[in-house]
Length: 319
Length: 265
Ligand SMILES: [Zn+2]
Image (cartoon, rainbow over all chains, first blue to last red; front, side, top):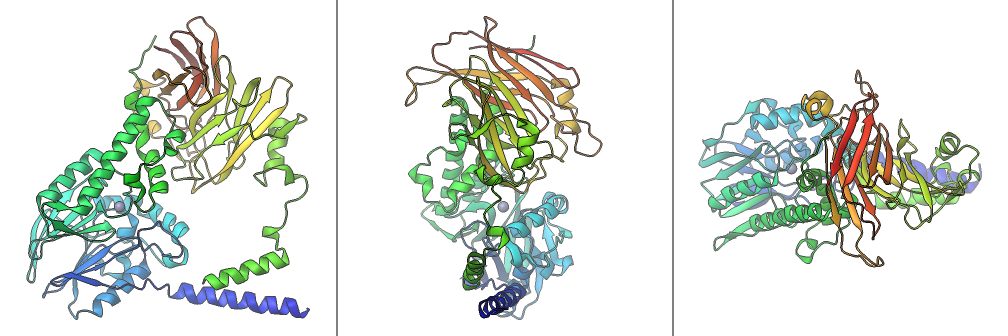
């Protein structure tokens, strides 16, 4: 073996060791940020799932109530969930009394493993969604997020949550059962602080995702959120958004995008465009500023164009 | 992490590891560098002349999220005298997706297909001299499209509506390069299009579809095969100046159920 090959071998060995070490402790570098009395958020990146971000594209939050901690969404992996727990423990000695999953998308529930199963709660349709589709989602995230997913398994929430008010410590919460982003979207409003945890009904600065969306229902849900006039909205993805006058920027932005998406697809279908032609339509300036707009728009065409084109095709004739 | 990746890359480049080595001479011609290309050539074009030709365009998303409904558009209109087009996917368990024979219509067709895994998707257009002209793209997908049961096969709805056709003809504004209006035809047929690869569900698919104008002249004949998506949607263009009136749609599936309908202009 000549010197060059020996050097190569050493380099490969080092590389292998480096990979193992990185995988063992993928560090999400979670930094909770306080946004209100006892209320903390952990904001993910406005990106797609990648090996580099380990799936941390989602927002999670927790409320330290004085009588225990309420956790809202558990993140995209077991490691994320464990690091979220450590981040909570660094801030408070109070124990976790409830961990919620806002809906059945994987970045919102795959951290469940890190929490006691009997404390994990979601709306009944979301529980069914996690039970039936959870495995497929997990396989998909393994493909997209790599090592950070190590050891992640689906934990189905055990506690169905009912819409309505509930109090923990000094906080009066209200759970809303809405839909539109998925068939079942849980929203939590904290009457005590005026913070609304909107889940994926609201996106901020990032293009909304639509794999299970019904846009009409989604828009109706946004009207319900506006009517609450929350002081602060924590979106599922993107920066928090505050009430200014009677406007909440992130809700308006999500609504405008959904209107644009719906009308773009309807117009394209009425013009007779093929799906591949819709996917390559030029995007107007008002949506081009949203993160990951191009891949997300193409995905949305795949999700929503079949229904739009059906409406555009004339009624059937049969001999 | 990044440094490590660069180090590994350097090793690969300097050592010429197999994954990065040049493909064997025979496959070097295939611009998509598919390991299956020689098999495809044997299977579909034995002893026939094949050239890779950029005039045959296949448009599909680089990454298809939904393997059951991958949008594909084939356009061979830059190539004169096309009489037959075969669309296939090297890595699909059923490689041929569909064939079409342009009559008076343009040699282009949009549709959606089921893909089982990441694969080249190719169109081979045969000209009057018998030569096959090939174009294609790689489509990445998580896959599973071919071994999943159709939604239709699980419901009773399709039985009532089987082979129902809805469609529409558009007169289109002249586009850049085209002198006058051409017509766009889109149609959708209710059919489960089961591949036969899902457990316990036999293959059940539309075999033939004929589109003719009101004078009985052929616009296009399509032989769709198992990988075409459930409830197929087809998009095609009829050249400017053709006043054909309403479009007659006829065809049958592999169980002998007939398709018979029409689309008003
Ligand atoms: Zn979601």
